[in-house]
Length: 220
Image (cartoon, rainbow, N blue to C red; front, side, top):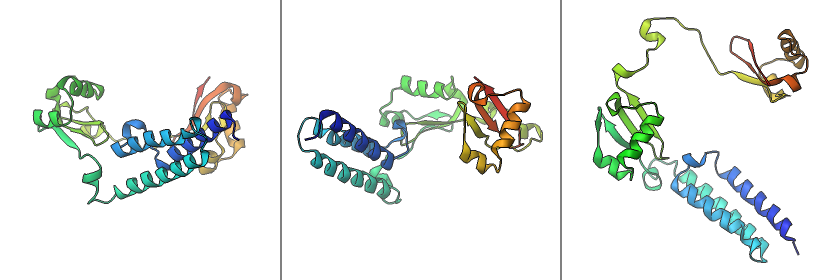
């Protein structure tokens, strides 16, 4: 007979494994069937808390994981995508608000303006196109005269800027990233020492390597 605490641990591991296998998306990026599947999965996995049949919950959880996984992969095919997922909705086209399209999204004008402000646009007249994506996020594109000035607009040459690579995070060395950069721990310690850091575990919150080979350090 499993104790209540053991059941809780089993349920947590089942739910965690299911969520880990099914998706890497945030809740806001999930489709309708993925959200529904996660809700059902949590209920089925929690069944042992109210019944004595633990194995039935394990079987049900496994079956649900398979069904949601299969549904997600079927949605990849172009012919099934329109059936299983919402299509993007163009709410602003050529600078004009399409009220019928907005109503179809079940958003009020006030809610839509809130999404626009979150994108940095306080005026609808600054927007050329706005698209409500299937996951509920808003993509907004400014009019050409409202775009921020880029170096290319001024013919100003720029250097390549790639992604920085974290080497130390919260006082711990990220060994995999260090190997990826073909660097050694001795090099890292020497670079930190050059910046006056003696005990990185106590002094460094984040240390990143940029594409120019510079070590950027944020202290605790």
